[in-house]
Length: 347
Ligand code: SF4
Ligand code: FES
Image (tube, rainbow, N blue to C red; front, top):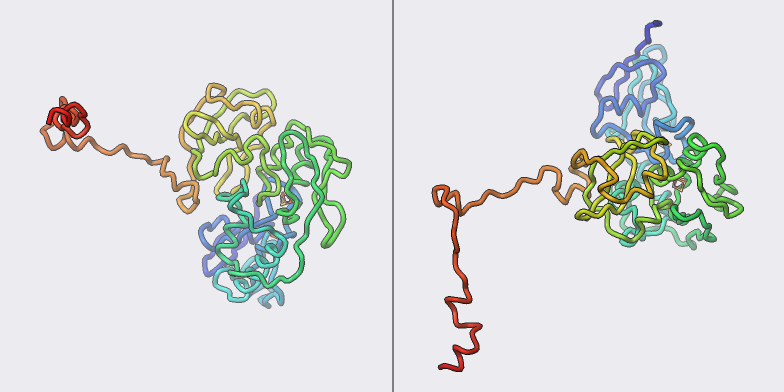
């Protein structure tokens, strides 16, 4: 087997050795932590994705060992390959921070601020970016874009005003299904995701567009307005499925399965695609073999339910009474006359 050539790249003063041809973003992901630039359009499982949103911009302060000149402009880290000896600045660069603030402001120009009623709230990458880089108020004085509603069938709701045109859903449909019936129509301010002739997206794998959408533009109609995601409990489960891997996350409230999604990795990307039958039709716990609570980053609002490492409080009464269990503590109604009407009449 041919040996893979590796190169050294330094990102925010941390050096890592990666295979030649790796992008700066992927190299940063190998380091992990805060040096990883945010990515709203790049998706490692989708060929050709990236280069649309500019949230992943970084500064290349040294091009390579052979040509150490810095790159004059900030570059999209998802689409720029590393060179040997390259030095990159992400969170250590004020230029990057400033540009990212501008990109977020730009993405939010037409995006409605409807997080309180949006099903994606709590797991929306734009919401997270808005908190980190957003401004308190908009400087935009013009009317926001609005769109005609398109019917995408019984399972998927398109809310075009929330779309940031990342193209992920288009790549998903292109690469997972045999005939794509939706895409980005028009250009510039008029660009929109649409089916053009109101066709429903009915391929068995089309539900995956919901999982790849970084905002609330494509949501699951079977889950819409049923619950806030942070009140639900994500549980890892699987079933024998003839069409897909059958490995999913169930989002439960009590015993009820409110939603089924593909499992996601630490970058918020789907690990393995799932079919529509698993996603939309298997909504009973008895349909699944439950593996246990799914891991959710402690920084996510979803982890606020503290279900994952739930520790039952100890029985303190038994502990302080040398292991003896209480028989009957007190029946307040038998010792108090407060609620006893007959007692009042007697006096
Ligand atoms: S609908 Fe969602 S996934 Fe599709 S382009 Fe818009 S933001 Fe991206
Ligand atoms: S993630 Fe790189 S441009 Fe969008």
